[in-house]
Length: 320
Image (cartoon, rainbow, N blue to C red; front, side, top):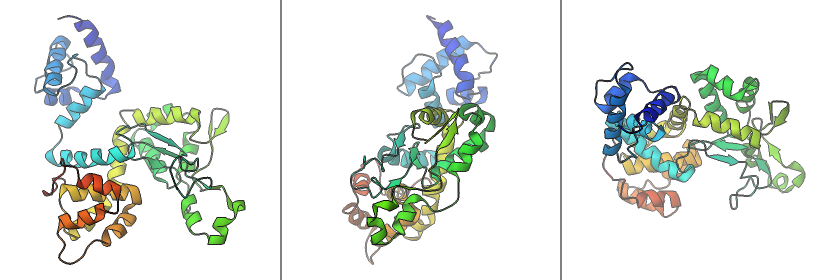
């Protein structure tokens, strides 16, 4: 076999980085592999797997191959959930675990956003763009630290506790404070800019910096891309945005994969309560599920995109 030594070396390198183990590899490849077995044999089996899944057949257990292996081991229910999440990610991050929005709302990067020049939303990060001001970024960081405190400390450094304290601080967000103001207060420039309790600079090295500054960006990307912490993004996205919608959708007869995808999408974009309030406006007597979603699609571009997506059907969602 040509270049097998290089392929073997790379597979050994990915062993720790990707957290793969003999049992998972064995099941995914359908072979009897143990760490002591021939690495040349493993390389051959990986190439077969890669060809089957239309990947570059280089024999290396790199990130793309490992992700395909993990998906191949999913149950039908897990695949149904992944299909919905992957579709919504197109709107949020393009599927990038390390996507960052650097206080773009305040900086005017989103047309007609209420926060422009007035409210620091702060750093938004990850697959679902977990936000600093709203508190979901803090929840994500806390979940990462609870998953593997040693790795979290190693990446963040000695101010890791301060980072968690700032991003998980109690109190109303800056956006909530703005919405509670009177019209006169909202018109008074002296009241701005607003920083909520979680949008504060955090010490990094010998400087105290906002999380959207380049130094913190590098730290955040390292956390977001780490194999141990990637599952945290999925776990939090599901618990914050999909799980609260399940009973609501069932109660209203919206059980298809198209309806669940739309419910999850609206929850991410508007918050779970906002999504339910929006959808409540379309539940009229005699309307079918298709008619309800079509009515929503006329008022929401994201809903329209999913209603028009032929990959999603009105069949009962497999993730219930």
